[in-house]
Length: 246
Image (cartoon, rainbow, N blue to C red):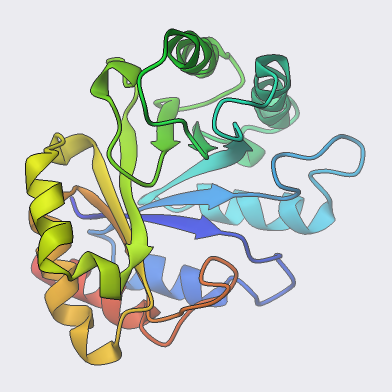
């Protein structure tokens, strides 16, 4: 099933997520992995999750083709690992009162991509924590975002998805960039490409191109605040992926 990895860094004011709900219902054969990020992470009780997130996250979890995951930054593995583990615990606590509010995995942002024994130990601890956290529901997805090629020794077998591209269309479309991707192969079933600043007339070709290289993708015409709003291309991107599966 084609999969969209969506950083949903849009505050859930009433109606703000409607373009997402519309896309989900119109494209049942597209899987949406949705990253929620209330406060550059889960924030702290009693302020987070607040009433707006408590209202909207259950609506997402009620959709059959949606997986909600929580945002955690590692600051390129320089953030104290104890803080990262505490963020995982906080997300895990969301389901204590209601499974409808729970997340089914963690998106680790700003991942160190070069081999270092310390980075391996750090990421393994974080991954293990997610996979064993009783309050993390479902498949307990682990998603890492180095945004570039990563030494695969940093991706143990429990890492489900790795974002190996997070770049502009101008860079992504260069011959040398595509050659670099070819020279740094990554398992398609575990790969994600995220490309922004895409000319509208290039959207269709790019969606198909990425689908051949990565199971997950995020594509937008927006060039600024591209994770904080829905671009003009949003329904087109989702529709293209959904149409291919009909």
